[in-house]
Image 1 (cartoon, rainbow, N blue to C red):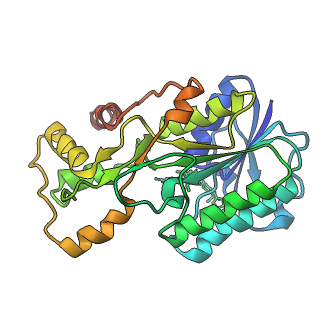
Image 2: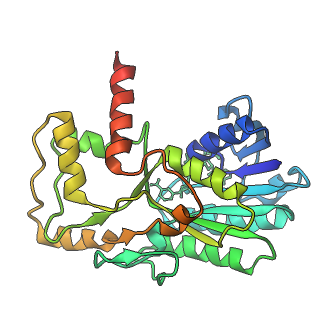
Length: 282
Ligand SMILES: NC(=O)c1ccc[n+]([C@@H]2O[C@H](COP(=O)([O-])OP(=O)(O)OC[C@H]3O[C@@H](n4cnc5c(N)ncnc54)[C@H](OP(=O)(O)O)[C@@H]3O)[C@@H](O)[C@H]2O)c1
């Protein structure tokens, strides 16, 4: 197959390398293609600049949109998700389009379960802008698949580990704050898998098997790192503010397609990250 990965950064490069190993011809589009490995075909383009998208490869079988905003501002989200996607839809007319979205499109905060059929009432401009991009897809005359990832972790994404290690972490315990996550290798694996299905659904949640209370994850990391366990957060106002992320995302629809997680829960995924770190420190 001929596959274009637009916004080919961390997840995109991992996906691209798997697709090349599968025997596909893969183009990686970004503003700095010199950062891509040599077995991906680099394409220098800016998704927010239609003029830079006029010479994209023809007869694509699949397009994967994984651009990320480079700042946490409404303007940056508008450019990366809405403007960029609109331009790419105009510049490529063929191929199934997989769009990487986020669980920030959900505003639920009561710790209950959320799935692909749940209402989308985002609590932040981030969720609003990503939902606006999803709506562009639903209006496009293309076979489109939306993948809503929860928090991505993995090699190089170790902020949580460091905060537990250096004693800055606190636990949002009362009531428990449910968090959802997916290892970066499973992000790539899941996109590869969905690209191979003959008739995928239009939306999938990209989360591992186990939504887990924030305090449980941090205390597990503390025991694993042999440092003091973080204490319960005392500031009730901050605690209430943090509750906006409190939900449990289900991966039942994804599992029904036969996808097998490499890291099915936070213990498996963080164990791998920590082992890799201890090896690279030697
Ligand atoms: N991080 C999380 O926890 C999380 C959670 C849910 C969903 N997601 C989503 O997951 C996706 C993958 O993230 P990632 O970690 O792979 O991000 P990443 O490593 O930052 O990659 C994104 C790539 O997009 C490219 N890009 C940004 N703006 C562009 C533009 N205007 N034109 C062309 N390329 C552009 C950047 O390359 P250049 O700078 O070279 O252009 C960058 O390499 C994103 O869509 C993100 O929103 C992330």
